[in-house]
Amino acid sequence: MKPKLAILLIVKSLPWRFKGGIQTHTWDLAQALQQKGNEVTVLTGGSFFQKEKVIQRDGITIVDLPYFPGRYVPFISFLAEEFAFNQQVKSWVNANHAAFDIIHAQGRSGYLLYQNPTLHAKIIQTIHGMTGIESKSDTNQNLNTRLHRFFAEKWENRLLQVSSKAIAVSEDLRTSVIQKNEGSATKINVIPNGVGQLIQDSKKGYNQVVNRFVFVGRLHPVKGLAPLVQALAKSEQKIYLDIIGEGPQREELEALVLRLNLQHQVRFLGAFENSTIQHLLPHYKGLVLPSVYESQGIVLLEANLQGIPVIASDLPSIRESVTPGFNGMLCDPNQPEAFTEAMSFLLANPVDAKRMGTQGKQRVIEDYSWNTIADQTIALYHQIAS
Image (cartoon, rainbow, N blue to C red; front, top):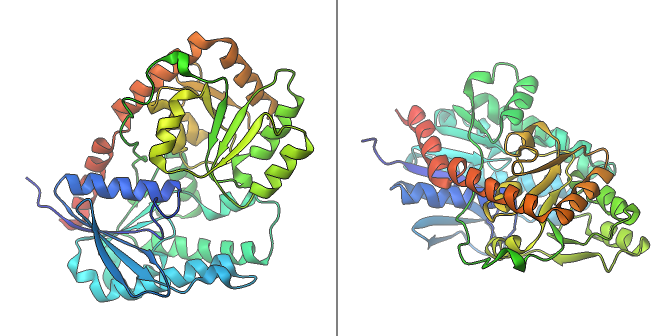
């Protein structure tokens, strides 16, 4: 029997403070690791105006680390926010690293740890996406975004170079990272995001489904919502869409909906807790994700787990979990009308929609449970700890 480990997870925020894929992934992973008997600490951002705070939640130690709120610094807010947090992380880990067998950095949280060579043998970095690829979808590049992209890419790559191991959440992401970082192939392992528990009582009958589709995610150009809204305006069939989430593109999208007179078809519901979203999902006809880039698309698995089909962009990373006609439909992200045609198909063919949702649920249960993902992650940890 392998010994239990003392594990430090680093993430800038947690899902009850900011709803996002990395935040949810980190907390779910922490819970799964703790349930397998490991000692888990999560280092995360706290209020600048309070002292460092240590709390216990579900058997996990959470360290709230105060840091300067760089988001309020004009012109360089993106970079200042991230750098301020990572600088505090570096200082804290330098002082406390002896207590941990594994230091696991999530995304861009912890990337300045490359500066301390004594830590390198303990570090694992999970790569959830690539800054350079994500930023290309934002046509409104300014000094703020350009500076952030330049330094974030540099520090991401530095941490990858010195980490003992790295995790990519999809085969496609692993391939992309290797292309940009020569010599990294042997250290990058593919372990996808896991998916939480099925909400058993959220749907008492398929006839409760409303004739609406749902998008869940960050309101950002990379998600492809503006072209989808424009396609809805051109569609001969009236299609209804709920948008769950917040982000920098919300005002632009609301103005677009108003200009196209779609306010009775498209609703902005704001952000919800993940548990609330899981209760809502089963009542929709399907989930739509028209992104131009995804490293995995965890929300697609979450929708399938709740028994509904998905309509997503035909991207290499998404093809790893969505099979056309089996658990959803794939569309060319450069042809937004293809999404409205797929939505019309599911509306007209409820039996096929139900079958895809059922098959998707079974696939997620078999391949993406947190029990499975935690076992794979722990096996990687022991390669370092041994």
